[in-house]
Amino acid sequence: MRAEEVVNRTFNLFEDKDTAQCQSRLEELCRGAVVLRAFALADEAPVLAALDEVTADAPPRHMVTPGGFRMSVALTNCGSYGWVTDHTGYRYQASDPDSGKPWPRMPDVFRKVARDAAARAGFENFNPDACLVNLYQPGARVSLHQDKNERDFSAPIVSVSLGLPAVFLWGGLRRQERQVRVQLTHGDVMVWGGPARLYFHGVRPVMEGYHPATGRLRINLTFRRAR
Ligand code: MD3
Ligand code: FE
Image (cartoon, rainbow, N blue to C red; front, side, top):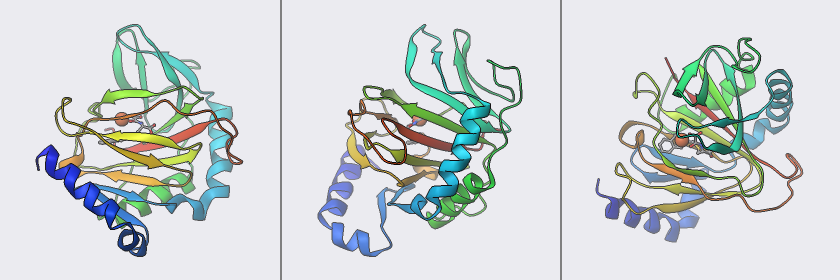
């Protein structure tokens, strides 16, 4: 699908917002990319409790990109593998580079939300082995990139947004393609796979604010099959 078609289809969907919301709040951005509005709210309390345990075991930290830039997002991981970056490159590894310990195990409620969201979007039997936890303080952003450090691209990616809202940038297979902006709020879940799996994406700087669940933070849980 060409970028212009993606944009047109997206705008048509937005014009048709009432219809989209009636279909249990599932919005299809393009083939393979779905937003499930408020999907994680049913499990909000256990998700937040489990998140506290993960961040207590493996505290979020600012990593450095291979180019030498300190990321504005602080990150940690849970599951068998964690995504890390340093001056040598991006990769998945089984241990936390700060502590040398294995990452905390993936909480059952995380796995369940990710699996159920993937199934709702049409990807049955999603079995993530990695959960990246991104913490955004006001001003933090993620520049346009592709997720391509995973071994095989047949599994989808599931992303849970918590706390402060953010504007998500949704591009195409080429960096130059124009981007659609999607507002993501507390409890929204996005699922990408198939033809959308390698789309460029990013996050605009998070605005100052306060959310009862997370305080002055946006938190994103990104579930992937890494190995
Ligand atoms: C779009 N995180 O950690 S959601 C990332 O909100 C990342 O913290 C953002 O991009 C965040 O890599 C965006 C995750 C996401 C993951 C995979 C995608 C968005 C995607 C693959 C294709 C298109
Ligand atoms: Fe990404």
